[in-house]
Each structure stands twice: as C-alpha cells, then as structure tokens.
Length: 359
Image (tube, rainbow, N blue to C red; front, top):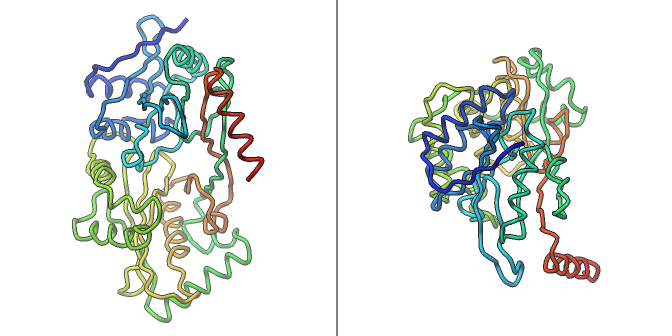
C-alpha cells in the first residue's frame, strides 16, 4: 500500500534526484514531466508549489506538484488545486501538455488513487489537470464528479522517406499537396530558393530578438497575447534553451528562407524520437493567398527531422487548418476538472446546466 508525502520545504536538487530516478525507471516519459521542463519551472514559480510523492516502503514511485488558489467569486465560491500548474495565467502561459503524475508504470493507477484520496480531505473543492493524454484513471475516484473537455490534437508519424519532402507531400491530400507545391513555386520564382538551417538550442541574441518580434507582431493583440511579452515566459524558455545538461530533452530552433528573405522560425522541443512543435514566428511579407510561409516551413521542418531519424512530429493540442492539412494522425488531449461531491459543487453544476439551457 502506498503512502503519500506532502512537502512544502524541499530543495531543487532533491527534486532533480527523484525525477532522474523515476525517468530512468520509466519508458518514454513525456518531456513536460521531466526535470528538463519541471526544474526551470520550479526555479521561477513566484510561490513554490507543494511536492507530493508516493512511496512504496522507502522507494519513491510517483511525483507531482500542486498549487492552490483561493475562491474566485462570483464564478467559483471555493478554492482550487492545480496539478503541475500555478493557477496564475501569466505563469501558466508556458502551457504544459501531456500533463500527468510522473509514476512508475506499475504504480500509476494506485498513485492517482492515493493522491485523490488526499485531495478529498482538503478544503479545496475543485482539482484541475490540464491537459493530459491519459484521462481514464483520473476519472474513476468515487468522491469526485468530473467536467472534461476533449481538445483535438494532431501529429505526423514520420518515416525515413519523408527526408525528401516530396515523399511527405505525396501522402497528403491532393488539395493540400497542390496548395503547398503552388506556394513553393511562387516563393522560389519571386524570392529565390527555399532553404532551412538549424540554429541549435540557443540562437544568437539578434536572431532570438527577431523571432520574438515576429511572434509579437502576430499574437501581441490577441486576448492571450504573445508569450514573448510575458517576462515569466521569456525567462523560462531562455532557461530551456540554455540547458546543457546531458539528457534526452533539448530545444532546437530552425530558420527558413526563400532566397535572402527570412520566412520565419520554428521553436521545437525534442525528446528521444519525438519533435514537439512549440511555436512559430512568421514573416508575413505579403497578403497574397499564394504566400504561404507557414505551410512551407512545416514541410521543410518535417523533412529535416525525418532525415535526423525522428519518428513523430507533434503539433499537440489545438484545432487549426494547417494541422489538419499536414497531419496523418489525430488524437485527443483532455482538460479535467474534478469536483468533490458536496452540496456546493452540486448547486454550481445545476446553475451551470440551467444557464447553458437558456443561452
């Protein structure tokens, strides 16, 4: 039987040692649960989260972090707990995906049950896991009801043949294939030959500044804004890029050109045989429909990573036409909100249902 240890006083070296042990004993740990991602996040959290570990005798078999927030009237008249997040929008803009408990596979289900048993005893009535690809075990505890939202996600299973982008395009739909080839032809005729180059994990300051500027230009006026206008986001990703420790995870920035025109950049997170496409920064030099730099950049990136032996090019969560056009596999990520079964949460559920009916 597992025992749960809850700590608010721990060192980052203790965390790193534990995560390393769990990673070494587990197959295919998601990058977002590894110390590559979690340690820089912990170093920058304004309030250190709780660290919850499960033990089987003296052996730590799982790890997860928890932040709590107080009630936020009028929307939620109770406090919440956030797994591997802070509950603060600016700090959470780095956006963890494939979120979960980091556990040895044979202990995962029991560790989740042990964790939720403890959550049941706490004052918070809502517990949030965003976003995960393994929701089932989180939805089985009898003390909680759940609100779930499935988020479409897309990826490409790569083959060695895709190192020639024509081989990749040949398995796309005829409409997508035609659209991309027309865009490539237009770019080459107007600007020059298409090319890409790797800038490694840490681009020079001038290039990084240009990438940030292009991203701000596209996203700066949206409701969420560009992450590069957020000092927490910038500092966190600078730390990821500068991480030179020896492990399976690292960053790689690619730059793309048509002749002398820089079309933009992609920022990618790499883990074993998987490329997680994190963001792009694109130079929209024209408003013409023939000018399709994003599709071209992804096509060249797919060929580049296929040539390096990667097996998955993962667009992750979010539904976009370019993802549908390029991907050959769709899957789901799930946002889970667990509610303790109390009169207050039942009342809130009734109110929400009523409001939805009359909208």
